[in-house]
Image 1: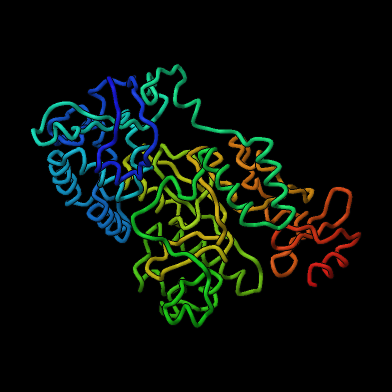
Image 2 (image 1 turned 90 degrees about the horizontal axis):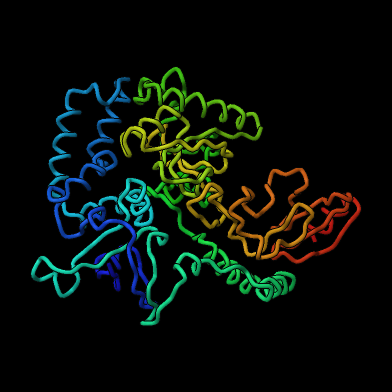
Length: 450
């Protein structure tokens, strides 16, 4: 079985770029592929695999919201079974192209492909240009996992090496040296370009593996006036101080749940978590909130991504996961998020956005997030070589020191003070240049403020 091209429609979906021409053998059986040009009613094996995760977002989430307000399960509502049955009938008449576009529209093309692969659908097949007008004939194939492809020829020449061994390029000593020179000289643009290239070669990208179709509330944080004018969304710190678009008694436990329709279990869990944090903020203390997010079961990352929708209620995350992906087809990510990194659009106490205003690279692995900063440092204050930045075995995102680490002190104007194991204080400018080394924190702070 050979493949030598991508169709126009699918190219638009996944942003396929022009490159080499390969002749390959496909290891999966042809019947396992989602047929782009046929309805699901003519693909019974595929339809059976797709039955659980394909859901109509608007219809079913409306049911979930109604169930939450009534404090019951969605399945107990009389209209639930009839709506699900009607949706199943609609899906049977959808073509493979519509199914894929539905999944991609809810999340992203990358997440749609990952979800299909997790269900045992290795790729997509579609009629080639010469067969499309007839509606039948020879087909092209798109594979989600390059390990299922055996390359026979590259640009007409026989090859013996599988594509997967060519895909990732380690950072060379020359690249490491070039990066270090740029970082030490404060050449941020060169350092950034080298980091982006290294991230791409390690399969880390600037987009997430999974996204909702609608945008979560996010930064940058605005002034109180910006929030009240509708030009920015408030952080939890601002909400705690009354800077938001809801009535002043919205978060009052004596009034809010009953008058503003969130007295279900998920709403009360959210209120308790938020009130605890808000009370600390009003006392001038730092606060964090434990939040939850449901993601498809094939998403492997353990950390939340920036601009993710999150909820202070585990109950709400579970109900969202079951409604969106199906029972057993999701998992819950749990994370403590600082109050200044939680944003609210004022619509639902259960729904917030997480955004720490930093840039990251993402990959669908356990250690899914790495810093996109052009220069990062180890705990001793040394610049981390480019070759060590994207280690999938390390949970360290700086590979970058945790901002809460006791060895990391904040200077001013973006400067950073790092206390080394020897007790010395190293001061770095916002561009990563070493400004000096001092014996005391007071002397370090003085240099950092110059």
